[in-house]
Length: 269
Image (tube, rainbow, N blue to C red):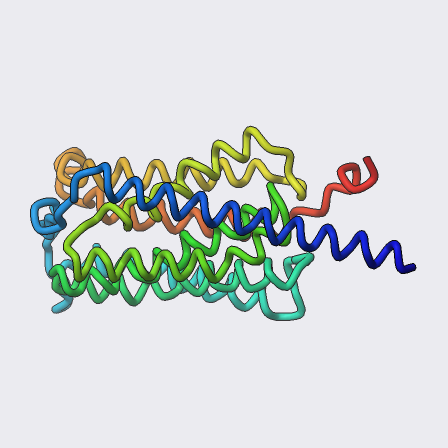
């Protein structure tokens, strides 16, 4: 019994040292990034002139505003299913918190993005990006739980969310997008790559790739805002479609959570 307790304590210390090394390496890389790369001023990169500026029923930029409604529905449903009797069968408390924050971020995006699109300005953009940063950060932590290590993933949830919030504050007050872009793009690159490269803890892990595909489509539609608006004969813009495509990401996440099971063969190997 004493030997078993000693082994557990040793493993706990090793995990703690491992997490410290990971956090330290991430901090060093961040410092090097900020020192070696040029500042990206938001003043010269932000463009609030979207293709579709039509006004229906007295609502400015109507379709860009209304297309955020799916985020509210999907995020609210996902949050309820996370916390109500653990419908998704999440195996650790950290996963419950991680997915809960993800769906909270998705639901809050409906309000933040709608508020921004009613009158697009730099100050309002803060409330558009803040809930998305929370969603990006929290989904990265639950992905670490699934693909790398439960303790590391659980312990990284709040530091990652804090990093997302700090990146928004740094952009807003320092007029520098580098930290925000790092927080924004790392999950979109790391999650598909790790999905392919690392063995999953759960079944139905291909849904991560489906979600990544919809996210990529959303980014293309965002970039092609004006072109899609012209191609559709001025019926719908790329930015409106971007909202609808991005809303498919949490949809596929919910389907995955509802269908998956722990891969027993990994535990018994």
